[in-house]
Amino acid sequence: MSRSLSYATRMFAAAALALPAVALAQADTRPVVVVFSFNNNAIGKDHADYDGMSKGVQDLLITDLAGNSKVRLIDRAKLQDLLAEQNLSKTNVVDQATAIRVGHMLGAQYAITGGFITDGKSKTRLDSHVIDMETSQISNPQTVTGAADDVLGLIAQLSTKVSGGLNLAPKPGAPRKTGETGEAAKTSPTQTGTPAASPAAKAATETYAKPVSEKSMKVKLDVATMKVYSNALDEMDKKNNAKAIELFKVVNAKFPDFEPASNNLRKLSPTKASH
Image (cartoon, rainbow, N blue to C red; front, top):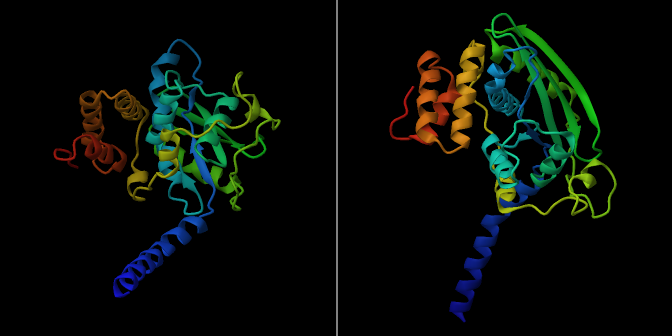
């Protein structure tokens, strides 16, 4: 009898401890946002020179938006894992239908896509818009233009504008049902509705981007360094860790207060990375 009571008591205690965590998970109804890599819209013979900025703009916009406590940002690495799994990582260009399909798989309520134009010397322009996963509608178009030697400043401006234009009311984020109309239902010739979430997608929904210090996001990062940082991200995505470390160290040496580079160095070589 006492043994049964002891077991029941332990089970009750375990359940009681689990309740706060369950309640917290259920209570977190902040919209989930996924940011895709930005397209290189530069015009002219030097167009390809700026391909390397796509992932950098994406990564740093995620980092800046993550500072908004009213939303949750899908971690870029987790998005990349899913894109690779879906064989979509070979190109940086993501169309609306793909953004909607991947966004649904990640449990996102909003997707942000965009592009950039720069001459690398004087001016850079960033453009973005938001796709609502529930309605498939495109909204909140934003454009910011500024000096090419302060890309982070431009990203911060864009982040503020995007945040201001988002409907931050809690959204259910329920998957679409089979046969539902809309762009999301047209994403695959072999199926309708939202694809079932894969293991990589499920892991992505459990990991959200974390903000860095305000000081870090005020570093005056130039276009050339942004390209190096973006190339480092690309090498990391390709699992070329030695090359990625080399490039992150270049950025870290020039801008020691730039936490994204330092954080990635710690991920790749935790025993050697330093500021």
